[in-house]
Amino acid sequence: MVPPTDFAYNEQTGADNEFQNKPGQAQEHIREDALCEFNEMVNRLRDAHIEVLLLNKHAQSHKELPDLPDAVFPNNWFSTSSNGTLTLYPMKTPNRRAEVRPEELTQLLNRNGYQVHKTEHVDKNHQQILEGTGSIIFDHKNQIAYAAISERCDKELFERFCQKKGYQAVSFTSQSSTGRPFYHTNVMMSVGEHFVVMCLESITDDQQKQLLLDSFTTTKKEVIDISLEQTEKSFCGNILQLHNSKGDKIIVMSDSAYRGFTKEQKAKLEKHGRLLPCPIPTIEQVGGGSTRCMLAENFMPKR
Image 1 (cartoon, rainbow, N blue to C red):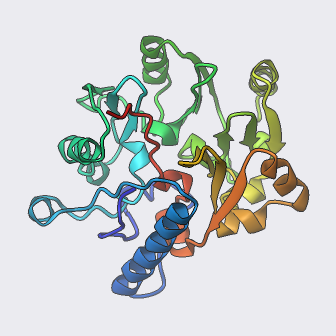
Image 2: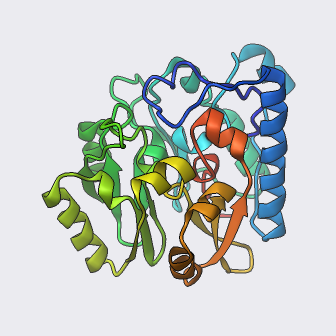
């Protein structure tokens, strides 16, 4: 996780992120609120026995880096693999590309006993865009990757990446209530070990929808269908299932997502792990992302 040291409304990403809202209060208050929400979330995760590593903006790098308003969402620029590979993804906007700090990340992982065997770039020159686990939803167990095509998810690059990784690529188109593509797949879809939360209403192509449902049936996933309203107003699609140090399953979500799920949907989710809501209203409303966007999972091997 990365503290929101420079948190602000990001003008560069606001062009296609309909979840962002310009704040009505002074910038310093926005930043203070975001930091408080972030620290509270870290505490809740650690209290649930989930290891959290913080990639801070150190004094030296702080002088060299521009402001990074979206740094709190690190899952878009990197992912880790169980074979020790650190994968770096091409970001759409310049101020998000500045977030990419593989050397500092590698040092952080190494200091905490994780082994980085190699670092790979999906597209070092940013000729095509594929924003990490914002764009790609991995089902690692079944080696399937799902992606909603958008300005931040190039279909051709996604398919090449999956072919190289040996994953089956399943792409589709989705749209919000305004008719525009969702900026990231992970705001409308989450894949857990034995469940899927998804806004099927956003997929207007019946053939694509059936292809997805067939895939979930084949992989024995329980489908929890959420509405466009739950997706857009409550971030119900932006959740993440984790394992803690005791081997328990924890499903992390925002407080707004927890309140947005129906009683029946919560009961279904609770079969797959303890629900852990975190109050992050400022980060959600101004940043346009939620808890899943704030978490970059670590699959690296330990020494």
